[in-house]
Image (cartoon, rainbow, N blue to C red; front, side, top):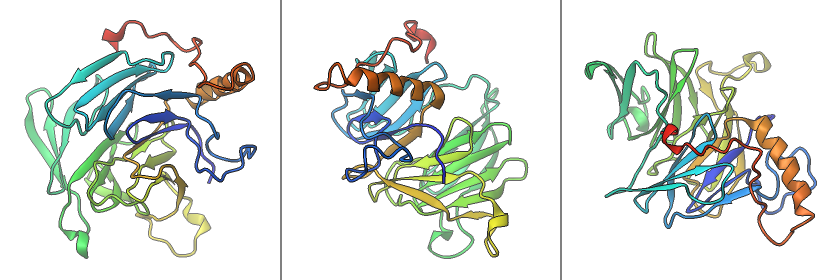
Length: 284
């Protein structure tokens, strides 16, 4: 599988463009991630639970230290810290055009509300038709698939499901990762060709959103068991996301490699060629 884009993986601190493992060849041009990150953010004092990119390169991070922090790719320091009274399990930048609000429940339901009047609209019970997963488990992530009227739902039965909102049918089920008790959620790449998720087995998993069925003689059309796993940490990978503009990230990557020759002892400073984003009030 070819990988498009960079991703960020969350532990108690997070990095952009992390390598897949310590044993990888640093000169391997086919590796999905470079051996050394070009930027690193520090500030949280406990495990990260969620990450969210904005369209103009702001990054939100939430943590079990009961804070949400705002960052920008052009700055190394935290721009703003929001204190909460409990864990912040999920965050997202407002899409600004949502007709419905969707919530996930502990018993495996996705409930839709009309945002204008906050009235109940419909619901999906996220579960398997048989086996141990026929009882719904906690919903840990919900993400829309723009243009196709579909949503991606992550839950604590170690399954990720893509639902068609036109008839509430299951379009695809993704398997391979482990998510039995964590607040892990899957998300799409910038072009929606792939999805990525952290995992309790210390790996990051990547799937094609739709696999080519013509390559297989026997395969279920609603199940995607074809994944790529990358060893990311020595602990649970609580969050993994793709960057919003991979081509721009890669151009910065090349520039940072040139800077390494000048200063190999410290992390490379994030370059000011990115949008400065000084009007932070427009980010939320």
